[in-house]
Image (cartoon, rainbow, N blue to C red; front, side, top):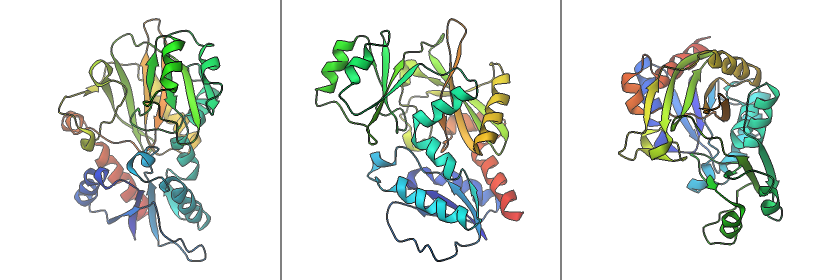
Length: 297
């Protein structure tokens, strides 16, 4: 019996492996992206934690998403305990899925148009006040996110070599939500508990927010945050429970006019080593203990 970690990026595994080892949790990484799945075979006994990333295609692992869909369907049909299972995978892979679920639960989310293909992008952009944000529906680390102050530069961008089409063909055109202060906040949750919150400096770090050690730039962009209204944590915990999300980070922006806008649910969250060094408790440590308890029970 062991914990199997379903993922596609070995660079993100070491902090979790260290936490598993420290807690005495037997574990094995299961890299997906190609291979054979025997649908008539029984999965091995154990607990399976899905960490598949929406940005897997940017690392040359374009088949990993659908490979994970197949594996999670197989595991769940066999009755195996899966953390962040099949439904959660769809939330990770689609900002449309996230935003519609958040809005239905009563969260303030950015005004958004989802445009399939490119023919209607410019016309749809004219429906939004400038500035506006353009992003890929399936993404990660803020990849594909750009701000435009007018429609004309956006139209030019679409015709330029810089333009990259979204992997699923869906582009999001979104209102620009200006923060009251130049940072966003991510709330980390594990197993129905609040871990901590971090502030990410968007003035220096832009929108490509990846707190993992593997993404380190040498410039500290993340810090522990304690001065925020904790009532939002309870709402995130309730939302996570209803959606079957057991490990995730929720990102929000506080605006000058008093809005608290939730715009992202990251279900394969990573943890920044600088924040971990000063936090009251460890994200990877809580995950290791949570999965250990599931394994023992």
